Length: 130
Image (cartoon, rainbow, N blue to C red; front, side, top):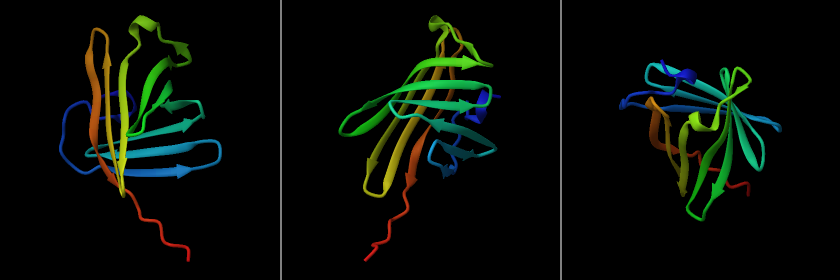
């Protein structure tokens, strides 16, 4: 089993996403076929994701078309991961009206790919306040 509940192998099926937003942090719950992954995200210039016993710190790289998150630090049980062992994480979001496309993939030196998923979310429409 992959830490945090992310799918390791490709499976086709629905993904349900729940977002609980608070002023200081967001809780993301991703329901994959057969497993659930929950994490807490906080930060502004960098995003810190608490995922079970792991704490991941991401730098944000914005472009006109997408948002990428680049892993710059990892702690496991509060112990820092050596830079040479730091996983390579691709986390990218692209949007278009009403739809958010995402791609997440993690590879670890000496182990290879340990998690990955991609897909899209239909965004709820905002009602016109007038």
